[in-house]
Length: 238
Image (cartoon, rainbow, N blue to C red):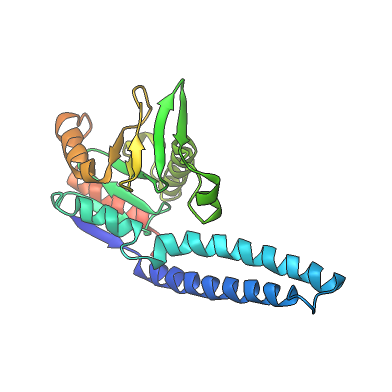
C-alpha cells in the first residue's frame, strides 16, 4: 500500500494543539485568580466568568486538535496500521485531499467515517442512533455522538468538488464508498441492519475492504486513471 501524507499540516496542527492547551490553562488559571475569595468584586467576578467561559471553549478546541494531531497513535495512524498490508494497488491519503482520510483501491474510493466516542451505534427506523454517551463524558471532552449521514454528505461534496475543479466530470469520477469505522474497544455495534453504509470495527477494516473489492468490482479503475485520480485529489492540498 502506498501512502500520501501531508506531514506539514500534521506538524503544524500538532503545535497548534499544544498552544491551545497551554493557552486554555492560562486563561482558566487567570479566571480562577480573579474569583479568588477576598479579592473578588462585581467587575472581577464578571471578568472571571468571561475568562472561565473562554478557557472552557479553548479547552474543547484543544481536545479536538489533540485527539487528531497530538496523541500517539493518531486516528490516521490507527487506520494506517489496520490497512498497511493491503496490496500496492491501494493508496492511502492522509490529510492530502479535501477530507482527512481516503483510500483509493482498484475499484472505488473508500471513505472512512470514524466513530471516536464510546457507547453503542445503531441504525433504527431509518436513523443513526449513538447511545451511552453520558453528560459527564461529554463535559470532560468526549466527542459528540457520531452522525455518519452528515459526515458522508459533507465529505462526498468536498471530494466531488475537488474532482470538478480538476476537470473530471461527475460521470467519470470513481465510486465513493463510505464505511463507518469503530475505533474504540468500548464502542459497540448495535443493530445496523438496513444501514446505508457498512459498519465495521477497526480490526475488520482491512478484511472488509479486500472482500468487497474482490467480490464486487463492476467498474475497475485502469492504471492510467489511477494516476489521474491521485493527481486530481491532491492538487493544491500538499
